[in-house]
Length: 197
Image (cartoon, rainbow, N blue to C red; front, top):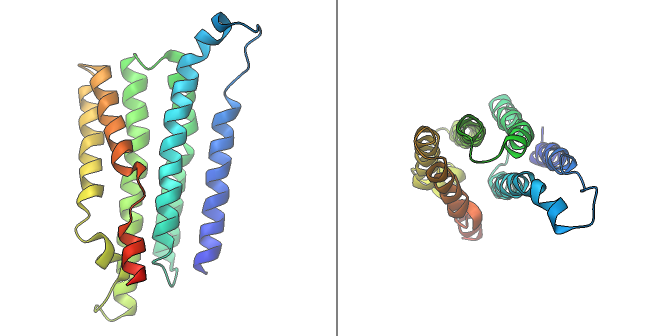
């Protein structure tokens, strides 16, 4: 399989995920500000999830530029990532219905953010393994780019901290989740820099 086919499939799945999320937003019955107020939790949950999905799409796009060959491990690692991303609309809807101040929906939402991050890390490691195997253990473009991946592993730790602290303070949990989004909001330029050199 080629990189472009994998990337096209992933783009399609991500587009469907975003579509499913937006379909959860229902227009109010009245044309007043008061009618919009009850929709605020759903809209906030949608915006946060849209940002997270957009971050994954952007970084997945950059990641695929380091791939020359796709093997079975990369295919399954990519499907693993898409599986976890596909659950984000469910947790977003639940959070929007219940409200972001509830402990359990916040924790489950945090888990739905953590699991794609773990899956993305597995995908990165699968690509590196394929590149090393193909070069006889000598070279991996992606390994040169990510190094020890401090940004990725720090994100996993921050998600775990947010999930853990949700039982004490939901607002603090959201601060942790937002921190990860801020860290990744700017696309990872390491790929672009490495491929240009």
